[in-house]
Length: 237
View 1: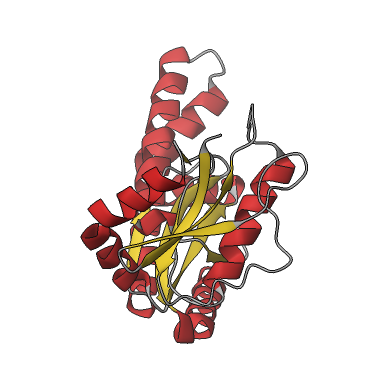
View 2: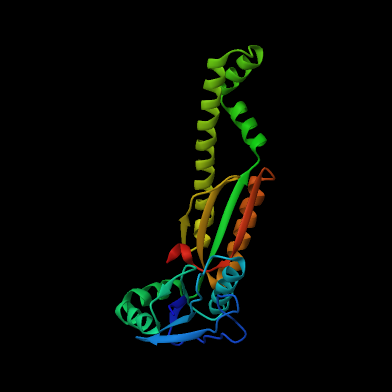
């Protein structure tokens, strides 16, 4: 059976895995593969593994436990090796890469921030701040059949939304950057205009959370901030 890989850690990591089970319908038994002063937490991969809720939760539980005790290089759900020997060989062959990544993540945690904004509030700002948008809006109200004006207004509002959301995202990341070690943007999905992960020193996590809270307060009720973490540092691996 193939070997399922959850994470790589330094060889001296406590690896406190008691009470945890791995992926699979019956919860596979976790074990550790050692190589080149590193450790890989693994289990036997079940047949027909798919990203079911129970298995995703089991994978995450292993990572959360490991994260609590030291540096962890998290593997994405579903990573398989041919067998334990192949995993040990990979640890040996890629030891410099893995050690470098673990040093970068040591004592640090990932937090993900998503931000959305009330659409009506944004539209009011655009119509208030853009003479052209306001003129076109008034024109279409007086002339409901003014097709060209409606098209132009829609294009103008769409561009203004993109520009204002981009600037707001840059401002938010800039304001929070000093409280983090690094940041990694990702594609935002509706209703959010910003999706960004921050790498934060473990002993400064409370300060970072406070910085997020203060930035949200400055922007007001029209903005919604959603902070999640600590998370496995996938965005920085």
